[in-house]
Image 1 (tube, rainbow, N blue to C red):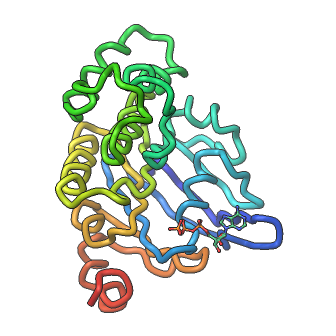
Image 2: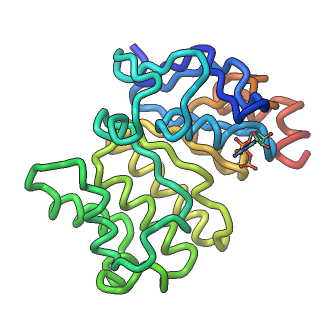
Length: 235
Ligand code: ATP
């Protein structure tokens, strides 16, 4: 049984239909990437899955349970957690407070242990533990956003453009860390403009075009697909 199963999802902004019947799945252990041009609907899909937007029709099943149309906080409690763009950290709060906020749905006492794990993945955050998030660099804010998502103990981690605007050396780090998180047992749904890198670490992928799935295949097959190469991999 897939961890995430999306069937015929339709999402509208007023008269604009941004998702026109999207179906996809994420299996246990997988990194699945979603590639597509600006405006293809990638962000709309993640926002619908995380409960920020309500779909007009279609279904979302998570771990076998229908979660279609649930509120965002209920969806986080189910274990579906989105790491937003780095700019969306709580700027006035310290690094530590941001990470604690990530664990707000939890009542157990392992929060300190999980914070240590985040610091092992992102040693830079430990060095900045008392600093307010607004003073971090763009790359550090991106790490903090991912760290905050991990604090919720996701059963599915959704990443929206984690490499956006980062220096090349940080991009490599971020992709390596995504692989590490996945290897430790968390399935990942990865939205990326950087299709080349995303397909390198993903198991499977979907190409989204104007709100519809145009192609679906293993990451390797997509990397070798002539249309994908021309449109998304620069030749
Ligand atoms: P990008 O990489 O540029 O974020 P995307 O693939 O994530 O692109 P979406 O942001 O999901 O695409 O946008 C999908 C479609 O929905 C686009 O046609 C966009 O113009 C439209 N859209 C997005 N947000 C809104 C909104 N708040 N109101 C109206 N239309 C919107």
